Length: 257
Image (cartoon, rainbow, N blue to C red; front, side, top):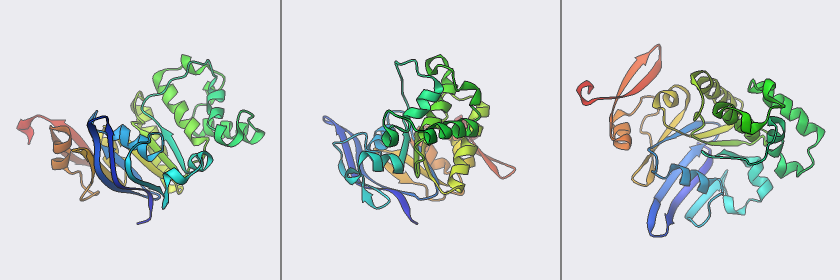
C-alpha cells in the first residue's frame, strides 16, 4: 500500500514525561484512517508531530516518502491540511475572512479573485452560504467547527488531518461531515482523523489504529470492530450490534459481555 504518512521510531517527551514511545505506523494514501484512544494518551501530540507543528521529537515522519522537516511552509500547506482540537481567534473576522486566511500560504495577505471564488465553492460544498458575512466569534461551536473545516479545504490539501472533527457538532452535522470526508477519499484525497465515537468510525472509515501504551497499534482486521482492543484502550467493555451491514459499537456494563 502506498503511504501518505509514515512514522518511524517516533519518540516524544515533555521533560522527563514520555508521551510517545517507539511509534511506527503508516497511513495509506486515498484511505480514511481513524485513530482511537483516550484523552491524554498522546493522540494530539502525535498529530502535531506528524504535521510539523511540534518539533523536538526523535524519529522520522515522512510525507509521501519525503521527511517532513525537509518541506517548506508552502509545500506543507499544499500537502497537509490540519484541523487541531482547539482553536480561537481574537479578531472579529467574518466567515469569508476566516476562509481566506486558509490561502495565506499561497496568496499572503492579498487574496486573489480565484481565492474568493474558492470561498463561494467551499461554502456551497459545506452548506454554509448563509454564514458568509457573519462574524466568526458569534457563531455556535458547531458552526465554527464547520467553518474551520472549510478553512482547511481552502488549502486544497492532498492529506486532511483532523483532531476530533465531530466535536461540537450535532447528530446531523456529524453524519454530514463523515459523509463529506468519505467523499473526499473517493475523490482521491487522504483523511486521517482522531475520533472518540467507535460507531461513527466503523461506519465510515477504511483503516483503524489504536493509541495504547504510548504507541500506535494498527487494527488486525479493519472489517470487524475489535472489541478486545477497544476494551484495552478505553478500559470498558463494548458491544457490537450489526444492523443493515452497519456496525453499531457501544460501551456497555459487564453484565452484557
